[in-house]
Length: 120
Image: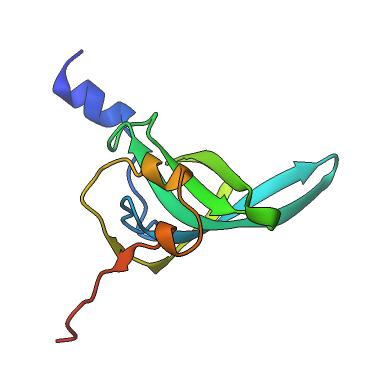
């Protein structure tokens, strides 16, 4: 395929979609359809992995700790109509692209150092 054709097939990143990275704490507002009803379900956690770059098949994995210390991971497509909104709550300073080591850690050991930004 030519480069022009490949560029036309890749979706445009909308202005309301923020730039996310590994270690970011995000709140994903996903549209859930149950029969005829539709509702928004919020999933809040740390971005553990990004896959696929900026291509149409790109995805990101979010991990949170549920009740009784059980870890839950969900993978969301980057360009999905089911994701209503994506909020970044905080950014973390990480040295890896995949943070799978967080699976074995709990409590204070699973904390990530927050990125600080200078206000201009």
